Image 1 (tube, rainbow, N blue to C red):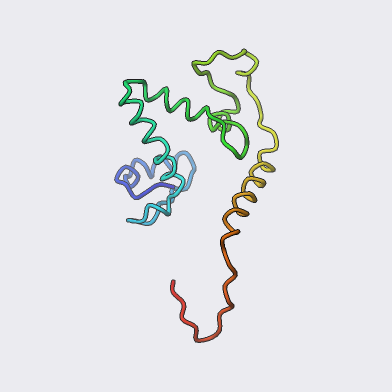
Image 2 (cartoon, helix red, strand yellow):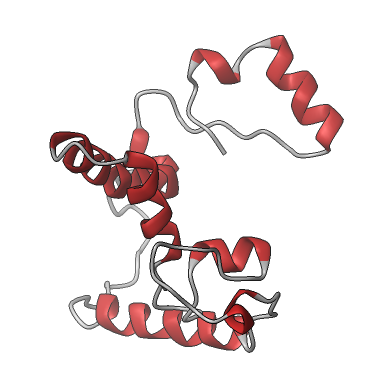
Length: 139
C-alpha cells in the first residue's frame, strides 16, 4: 500500500509490481491517515534521522538501531522478523546470536498484543443506542 505519489503511478512501477506478483493498493488522495502504517513509520524515522544529522552521526546507523530494537508484540526486532536472524550492531555479541532463528509463537503473541490494545481502546467507549427507521445518520 502506498500513497498516490508520482513514483508509484509510473508505468515502470506497475510493471515492477506485475513482475514480482504483488498487488499495488493506493490510499485515498489528500487523506494520509488511511495509510497509517507508512505514516507511523515516517513519524518514527524522521526525528531519528534529523537528530543524527544534527549530531553529525551516521543516519543509517541510527536506522539500523531502530530496526534492531525489539518490538512489543512478537518480542523480536523488525529486522529479525524479516530475515529470521539478528543483524550485527556495534555492540559485541556471541556468534550463536547471529545464527538464523525462527521466532516462536508469533501469531499467539500478536493475538495477545491485539487483545491488549483492544482492551485499552474499548475501556473509554460506550455502547450506542440501536438505530431506528428515520434516524439521522452521518457517513
